[in-house]
Image (cartoon, rainbow, N blue to C red):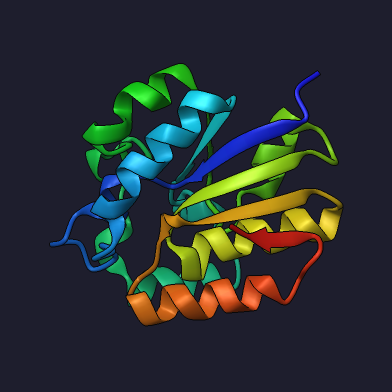
Length: 173
């Protein structure tokens, strides 16, 4: 049984492309650290995909009103894993979910109390949401700061600081 996993949160074009409204200016700097981690650990790659309109409830309707550019089918190329990590994703377990946090999808692969080494984007949204839910459920979580990208360097730091408050369940490395 595997008890330590790398989780690469949402390394997708929509979050990496500098021309995307959601593109992280830090994303390119995460590729090599993510590759190094993936060489050493079994890997889960997550993908954010929009829920079909009929399945959107509550605040998700308002969310897509605010971000109409992202209201596309889940198989739109915008939601593909970036080319620089596509080979890694081809070897990994890939899970998709229409939520910021990916813990439920990850837990279906890892079981209930794994150790997760977390990388990805955006530190201040999907990474944060995944990490806190995982820790709350009993997972031990290591967030690799240099392998995460925020919406801005300031927001990246703020998210890392918030996650550090959850020590010893969450460790920033």
